[in-house]
Image (tube, rainbow, N blue to C red):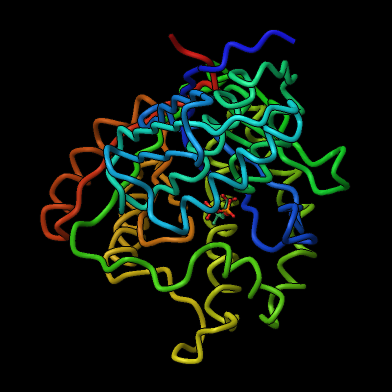
Length: 335
Ligand code: DP6
């Protein structure tokens, strides 16, 4: 096996249209339900990995700063998976940079583990196909598996052999715009998505959500393939609210101070209300939320200027800002 020993890769975060919430296997990040996503071209992680005999420990720098203990543990565990697969004993220098601000409500772990998986496996001399790479990324962060293929992805439940993301449609399939809003004044979230997944089954609504999902996903998938925003928009909104209804009624372990997980901030609800008003005025724009206060808006390219004009004045009041994405490419090696 030839080993380049160093490689660099980029990946985008992805936004789930039908979301992953709850697991059947927490160690291996096997999801309790199928999910559907789109890569966000407007945000990117670039990661460089260099295996070297000069190090006795992995050296991990994120956005120019040495990684904290928790992150180090997670990244080293991921490098260990690559080392085991490639039978390479060397420690690595990892340098990773996001071009989007931390606290923007974008889970950087999806793009981070997608880029890390590709850069580290290539540097170690592994030639993983897209499904093996997606499975590897999943072990680092569940949703990272969906940042491997280009464009729109589908990640089914199932055993290890099936639990990887497949491309549902390429980026150019649909001239969709995703407008990600975030707020400067919201506090960091109190409960991580990992804790949220684990708490989900404690919600009395969790089973009901899982029972609804196959039908919702099938309809959303068809609407996506048909580029039918008026059909997929309400499905995506109801899906996000369903996840948050479960979160708000679930009890995370180790958090006796809270009753239910509230990822929303007052600004979240203000944007949701505004989107509903804009739609009443005839503007076809829809919202979705992940495990955070940020709101992502979906519209077609032709509607973008109208949405931006309305959003700009709303966000002034909310001390918020936004960035715009198109459906993005998957993880790829760079020079
Ligand atoms: C709400 O377990 O992938 O975004 O590893 O913390 O980034 P992190 O999250 P992960 O859960 C993502 C949950 C979600 C929904 C989704 O992306 O499907």
